[in-house]
Length: 198
Image (cartoon, rainbow, N blue to C red):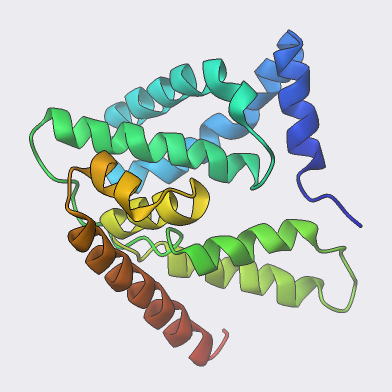
């Protein structure tokens, strides 16, 4: 059986053993991706995006020992980046701007992660690339608050009670937002999949 996260697991293991080249690779490989992830979520402010991504790496490196390769390393890194973004808006006493980013939807994330596990085949390479493209487009339209709550539930595996404490919400409000977030994801992705593929 193919281990889709083997490369991620090995990279983290090398970093934890003090391999500086592995740490350089982590930054070189993931800084641009986290930048692209954060940019639309902070109002497309390049300076703020740099600050958020830098802060994310400062939090990530001391916690790499917690990575269990249950999801792609990039997804794990994004969960830290989400919290840095949320913390920024909390410090300003404002709620995060509603940016419809569909990649925050758990079903889309799952589809993207599943692509890493597929062996390339000449006859389906185009279809997989097209699915990945549609998944990314769909994810670009999910509101950040929905992505955050779905991340807590499906990536971090938190209970409703833990989520309520983390978000400073009541458990009932968390359940309500989870329901809306799941439905928004299902609706958006289903609509995209019904449309013609250019």
